[in-house]
Length: 302
Image 1 (cartoon, rainbow, N blue to C red):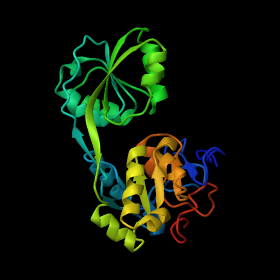
Image 2: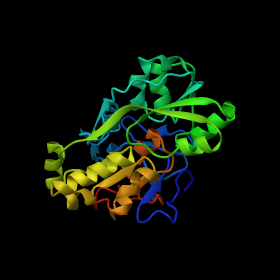
Image 3: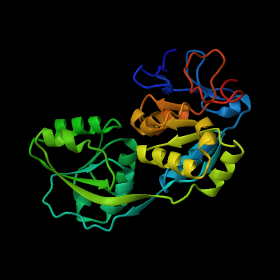
Image 4: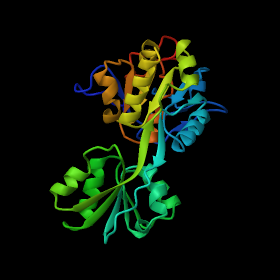
């Protein structure tokens, strides 16, 4: 079916979903949104009378915005982050710099009150770019949603040898620093914030898992997904955790679940929140979109 794709052979056991190529049309009053062209995932579970209980494990404040969007789609969000974001307290490096690199909206509050706020900001995707603009950073350049696209954007806009400062978290991936360094850019990393895991699984999540009361979970980072799994395991809730449908922003985010053999995971075909949330809708009976095999009977199809 056009607009949806199956997970490649390299990703075991999960499914990949995408957003419709054409904008959705809305049905009658209170009716579901659905892609053009016939069957497909609807974006409102209430289209078949089923509202999902969705665990939003994303840190605050972004997690609160996501929970609002989940509720707007007709689902019941359970906002319970497993990571606590806080400024690192490290002073920003002294330049001069030619541009600022942002791979997470979580770095924006620290940047906004620093001398780096006057630099052109190159952002990994729309969510980070929107946060940068809201904080008054200008100009803001938006990449396609992943580190590779960000490196390509910088490569097309700035000459080799340009001096870049990357406002990042304490735990971070090798990219885009590795690619930018290999291409001759001079990159300085500023640890602007840190994500600290909670010591125990949030009590509302533990209680809900004990009753198999969570249908889906949203994961936005590899570390968040790994932390959620670890906390569930430590709380004696791993079996129930494995029965939840884990919706991951990218294959990288899903990696800890794949490594642990968690079967009930699905991966957004594009690494943006719109695509991720579109996957929460139930699948119509005439759809050939692949779903996670971990979805429980009665919840996966109308």
